Length: 388
Ligand SMILES: *Cc1c(COP(=O)(O)O)cnc(C)c1O
Image 1 (cartoon, rainbow, N blue to C red):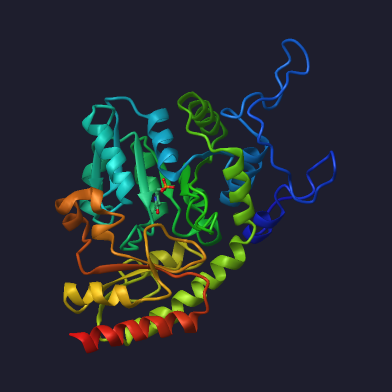
Image 2 (image 1 turned 60 degrees about the vertical axis):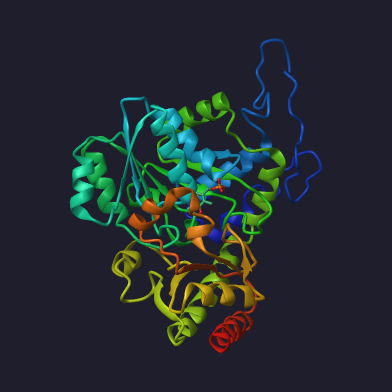
């Protein structure tokens, strides 16, 4: 069926597909290998590294959600990005990536470039001049991450795709923060979408996984070949779990969004909060672009703590309902200090360049009742004020 809404695709993919027992929910196939019906007759699935029914269903759901031709589900988001550069770059080729991309992505591209696998340029993609200069160097690939992690900066997908295509480059968008419920990069001109399914798509903080979805069938085929070649693919159990998590994506994203708006309202009145970063705020530099290319603003937000660094640490320690942890997009609320946690691999210089300060805190707003979350923030702010 065509043009089904994301929530429907997420719930229905694979339901009632079992032909043996008519199980409503598709069963799990843990077998590593599958019999050949006869000599020389290759079955649909022969060996789980190259393909498996559970991974196949998840790939089907994710490509339909992102409006792509096909997908490769990988063992993590990082390996989806690694698969992409492995398949398309030679040592002469250049990739352009955001200067404030996910810390692990920065480390991956930077380390592999230092080994001579390809060339990389980290660019502030909202700086038109810097981006134009980078494009003039004829990149083979361009990665966008919008909204970015942790500053939720937004760049114009459609515009940058046109610029990249004009110089013959292919574009991937890391859509981890919004999911296809709120943004569909392939419909805006991108060639690939990458996700850490570890985050919102699985949504329950119990599976590490990733995916790369291609708009063109030929790219999808090439990536499938490479995924099997380098062994980047996801396991049946993880695929089963992720499809199970994906079922509730539409409902979860709605509550994440509603609660984050209430929390933003609260934070705006809080004296220990200096700058708030979220695309829904009219003063956010990417607000207009976000309104144009996103269906929702998303629920990841960050802010500069206005007190001292000691006070910041004290505040974080007093939170009950925000666990101090990395990752994001799960049912549970999290607080993260990017400079010492998710983004520490970048090093001080790159952190400063990306605008990630020691005062920055990032919130992943979970599915607890919003009034409890706000009460928790409020008591921790009050304790931080009283103690200093
Ligand atoms: C977590 C994350 C990744 C990496 O994914 P893993 O599943 O941890 O390997 C990539 N991009 C973004 C935006 C992320 O948040």
